[in-house]
Each structure stands twice: as C-alpha cells, then as structure tokens.
Image (tube, rainbow over all chains, first blue to last red; front, side, top):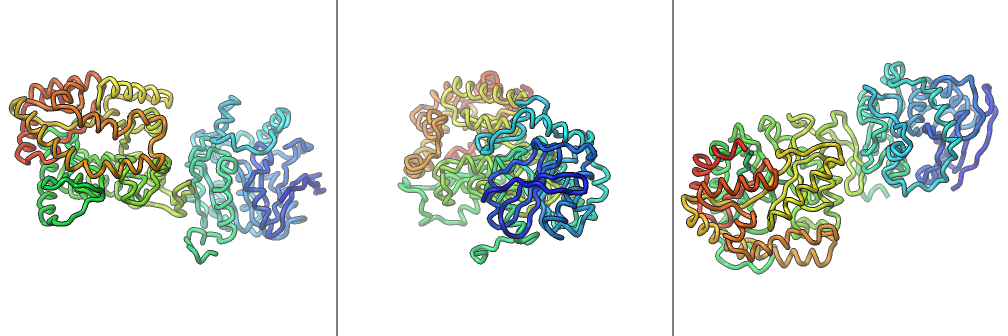
Length: 259
Length: 374
C-alpha cells in the first residue's frame, strides 16, 4: 500500500504528514534524517493506518522557529493525533523519533498504547555513540547493508536542513536527564529495538530504558546497524507486528496454534 | 609460553576397522568407558601439577574418535578437581547447539572454576553436521550469529531478545553471568582468510592445528595479525594457539616408536569411519567456500597421514622425541609462528596410559622449566 503526503493546519502552523493503509492507527515518528518510507513501514499499512508526521523544517517542509526542543515537537504531535488519529494509538519511533516517542508517552500517557522504540536517541552515556561527522563514516554507521536501501536519496540541501533542524531541537543534549527521571512513569507497554552493529546508539541506552520503563522488552536485531528498518526489514517487521498484536505476550512461542 | 593439556578422550580398544559413520556400539562395554573417563579425568586433573597451564577437551559425536559428546560435563568435573589451570573447552560446536545453552553452561563452568574458563567456539568437522541434522552450508553463518549471541548473553545485565537469521529468542537473561569480565577469553579457528576475518573482529584467540607445513601456518598467522590490525588491535603470542600431537619419552627412538604406533590406530581406526561421511558432506553441501578450499581439514589430514613420524617432526606437524628434542621443537614453533599457546595432545590414539604418564613427568621435570619462560 502506498503513502499519501498531506497537510493539516494546527494551532502552531501547518504540518505535513504521510498517511497510508487501513486498520488500527500507528503514529510513526521519524529519525534525524527525516521520514524514510522503508519496506517494513510500507508493509505495516497492510493492517494499520500509519501516520508519519514530518517535523517542520525536515524534508523540505517550512521551518517553524517556535520549535526549540523535542518537547515542542511532541506538543505538535499530540495536537496532530488528537485532531486526526484518535484518542489512543500505537507509536513507533526511529532514533530521534524514539526520543520524541518517549516524551509523548511521558507527557500524554493516555494516548500511547503500544510503544516501539527503534534505536532510541537521547541517551549517549559518557558521550558514547552519535553520528560521525565524516560522511563516509556516517553512511557506514547508518547501514550495515546499504545495498538494501530502496528509497530515493534525499538531496544534500534537504539532508543539511534536516541536520540543522535536528540540532536545534536536540540542543546538544547527550543524555536527556529530565526524560530519564520520568521513564518509570511510562504506562505504555514498550519494546526497545537495537541493531547488533549499531555504533550510533550504544547498547547501554537500550539497557537504561529497559531498566527504567516498567513494562518493557528489548530485542537485538542481528546484523543491523543504526538503520534497522533498512538493514533487516523482515526481522524489524516481524517484531513490530508481533508486538503490536500481542504486546508483552509476544515472548511466547505459540507454535502452530498461532495460525 | 603456556601449555594446554588437551585430551581427545579416544576409545583405545576398538579391535575392528570401522567401515561406516556413525559407528556401531555393538559389543562395547560401557563400564570400560567409565574406567576410561576416570583415567582421562585423572590425567587432566594431574596435569596442572605437571607444568600445564590449561587443561581441556573438545566435542565429537557418534564414534570412538572421542568420548566427549558434551565436553562441558568433563569441564564440570575439572572445575571442582583443579584449582589453578585454565579450563579450555576447544570447543563447543556452536552451529550444532542451542547458543543460549552454551552461554549458560560456559558461564556455569567459569563461575564454578572461579573464572578459569577459556571458551572455544568452533565450527566442527563436516560429518558432525549429520549427527545433529544441521545444514552444513549454514555452518559459518550459524557460527557467527551464535558467537555474537553468546557474547550478548554474557555481557547484557538487562533481559533482552534476539532476532536473527538462525536464532530467535524473545527473552533472555542467563544466570549466572561469568566471573571474568567483560567475558571469558574466546578461542576460534582461523586457518584461512575467511575465518580470520571474524576471529579478528571478535578479538578471539586464534587457533590453528594440523600443520602440514610451517610456512603455510606462518602465512595464516601473519594474515590473522594483519586482519586484527584492521580491527584496531595487535595480537600478541597470547592470542595465538597452535595444536600439536606430542610424545615425550626418554629417548628419541622410544618416542617415535610410540607415536608411530599410536598414529596408526588414530588414522586407521579412529579417523577411518569419518572419511566417507565427510566426503558426503563436502560433495553435497557448501561446507567449504572457495576461500578455504585449498587449506581445509581433510587435505591437511590426508597429507599428514601419508608422512612418517620423522617427516611430521621436520614439517612442524607434531612434537616428538626426548626432552631435549622436544624443547628444540617447541622453541622452533615459538620462533616461527610467534605462538604463546600450545595445545598438546599426549593421548594420541591408543597411546598407552603409562607412556602418557611418563611423558607428563618428563614435561614437568625437563621440558617445562626450559620453555615456560619463552
């Protein structure tokens, strides 16, 4: 199923978003590189209505200078969801999007049902991780299997603006201590996903989230770097769909009964 | 240098020439095997007081070649009966096993022994894949994935799941974790470029055995070092283990006589039934890739089988002789291969227990004092 690009007027201005599919709603929150309509995301539209809002300033959208933090962006996501998605929905984040998703779960606990945190940013303990400045090293950090990239590359200008917008919202925060303190209050059942080859988000970040979010699971996706959806699309989709369907019960092997 | 008293735990009394693998146990008395376990474990326990720094064994299935289908059970006994030697399992055949179980058992051995485990992660030899009904073509990818999963099992305190190509485990948290931090040293085979790449990535001890020519072995060691440098580390002699059959006797002639007799049993009886099964695997699967086709286990074995004891000594394939000769041969290996670890099989084939014991005494009294400081 394909996605459509649409726009909605919100109290703080216009918001563009991708939408596709039918079924229970899922809000997908994008990474610092902007929205990438990956294979698992496309496949998810088979059973879900997937909304992927674009943070103003990303992906060639109009910038909104009033957005100065992740929390500012989260307030827009919440208003977007309230107007368009419904009172309760599942959330999938990718990297910076997982950071956003965590704030959404903390600030708007009644909205978030299942929470999936893909390679979550915001917890670079002792400065570990992060994207290399050098472009070749950065590409290598993002993809263990770049031959699997199927989407059209974004232009250098768009990528540069995405990077600047991310920096403005991230405010050079290495560890989001305020968010960290509120992790135990998260009510959503949570799945944390990490790539075994990911050097951008260190494994400690996933362990910290697992330790502090009350109802959480975490899983390593073997042979995936930071872009787990590109490097291992089938494995990522299997975890997404199983967790969205069964919540914490996804750990049980149901065997042939599952059918 | 450090020395591993390695035991294959062979069955030494097979009086026929087995023609097939798996090998029938018709007529085999298991109480005789009980006595052998006692004899072999006693040798291994005593080895730590005979100049050996490590004691260890490995895994084989369905034949008199080795009586340790699960070497971790032997290691459990060694953990209680030894106090200072490293316990080297060289190793569990990861592609055949449940990696979570390996992680748990290895961690138990490390804890029971007070942090003395050396954890071998091996691919095994081709016919073992028939034993556990695992596709040989998946041997490398299973080894790689299982290795990384086991390291995660040892190093991740918080529960985790694993979503891989061969293994999916949704919720893992092994108890206990190993004593050694971040985890026990791991040891893997790296006799060709393809395996060296992964061993270097994992910063494991490189193991090489069945040397048919020192120059080939030297090239493999150099390739491993070069690959390790590309991963940002420099191997030392403590990262290179060389496996050798050894016989030490009071004279060269006596040692060569014992070795020749034991090798006849080793090649003609213990190795014989495996050959046809190995050919089946090699002919109908992608166990070997092009990269290692020229330097594989079977070719090396065939080469060694055709050589006299003297030729094997000259080639650096075995260590054999009086204490003085053995010291020279060990020094040569150290110099040529820059290895700091020797994996020594004293119980070769049906080598009599008395010869094994005499060799241990000579090693303790006359060899170890001369070579331990190398």
